Amino acid sequence: MFLATVALLAASRRLVGNPRAREWIFAVSQVAVLLLIVDIDARGILFLVLPLLCIVYLLAKALAPTPGKTRPRGALAGAILVPVAALAFVKYAFAGAILARVSGAAGWKFAPLTVVGLSYLVFKGIHYLVDVSSGRVTAPTFRSYLCFMMFFPTYLSGPMDRYGRFRRDFENPLPLTRDAALEACWRIVLGLFKKTVLAVLCAPFAYASYTTPALGGISVAKAWMAVYAYAFLLYFDFSGYSDLAIGTARLFGIAVPENFRNPYLKRNIIEFWTAWHITLSTWLRDYLFLPIGKALMKRKRGAGSNLPVASASYLATFAIAGIWHGDGWNFLAWGVMHGLGLSACKAYGEWSRRLPAGYHRFMMETFPGKALSTIVTFHFVILSWTLFANDLPRAAVVYRRLLGIG
Image (tube, rainbow, N blue to C red):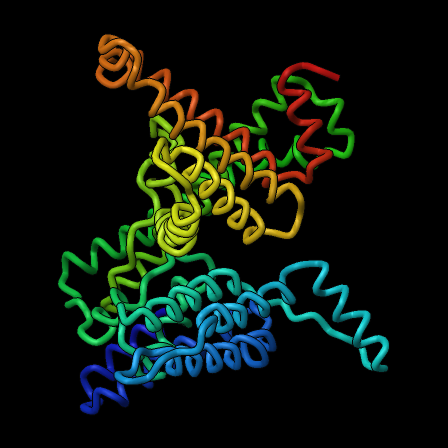
């Protein structure tokens, strides 16, 4: 399907003279590929995703700044609630239970839809609504908007592009030179190698412990092996997918942003989030952390340190990020753990300024200092991944086994 799509779009650029027709061919091809992928429930795309995209598009057009026209207060917040509500009712158990109860009372059976990629779609929709409303991007044609939202290389798991950047490449595709094609193919091969070789090699060591019914009986060594293996499984699987998406998109003339830059080699948790799932972390910064911080700063009274505001912003942002990843308490706990880690890192940065200059030189310029901070950060991150792999009771058992307790 991918090769057929590349051939179709290459032929359309040569044979179709009308730019609008070429853009419609591009848009329809993206939707068609997603409908034909076996693991995706086509009902979810046809009966939820496409209607939701149409609604978001119309809301954005209504929110676009118009000279002499004032927007009702709360209009943007109301528009954002539309995709958020769609995500809540599809993804989260409480909403599904409500729908099942209502449908049972009405005499018809609710058949839940499996909508893969909806979480990313909703974040892209929120970004689109905010940027059009603020005037950062102009309201586009529906075909370019549809291509941005349904671009199949990034639809399932990112990287999450921004509309303004995507549209530049969409309207003027990057030339596919020999070197560019080789680089794109290399990224695809690298991504496949990470996902189908390296991640697969890590999986048995990770899941052999995490999926054991009698989890409390595993040894300390096996528990640590599972933690390390799962950390690299996540990295190879997710960065491999990003490599695939970046290489595939480049063959279409679109330069998708990088998503990973050696995250496990960073010296603190703030640096980690500038290198892990970069497009998500920048989205969280721009559309959650900064607005929350700005709102809290307005309520702040008097001068003094901004640490409480930054800490509250980190906690709120990553609590939402945790809920976005899943509906279990373990995901919320993961978000709170990272929010606290980021707050501690910020506090440590302010506190360490009062320490002697020799301490700073040791930590920032010497190999032992850099290695120590990298090791501490790495273990903080990989211990948090245990909350991704297990619900809270099982995660608690893993943590006890890591310490040799119980």
